[in-house]
Image (cartoon, rainbow, N blue to C red):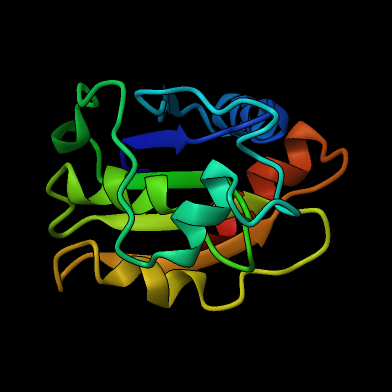
Amino acid sequence: MSKILTAYFSAQGTTARVAKELAQAVGADIYEIKPAVPYTKADLNWMDKKSRSSVEMSNKSSRPALADRDADIAAYDTILLGFPIWWYVAPTIINSFLESYDFSGKKIVLFATSGGSGFGKTAAGLSCSVADDTEIIEGKILNGKQTAEDLKTWAESIL
């Protein structure tokens, strides 16, 4: 098996929990994608069209700043990339992350948490942020309580 990194963005902790469980189940290293300015509860109020997340998600070119750019992407063949689904796609900070590194020749497997929606056009929306020879695979929505064995079986089926 190739060297695997589980990279994730989590605004409220749900995706962080799943990412840590997934990384442990498959023996992957882990990296948290952090915004330069953390999101507050008010920032995440999707019902407020002026909230930070609403403004970012309504502008497809929005690229929130990252707190750091020290992930050693070159050391990995496969990246399990996790995030919450916002407005039926990945938060734009995921584009910021993808555009900050060279993912040429790598496989990126998406996983997400969601309150009810699926991936929608997430994979297509992220493909513009990586090199043409980067493989992006729509993985799975990982809500609820997956066992370590369930996570390992799923990951092995796509890796």
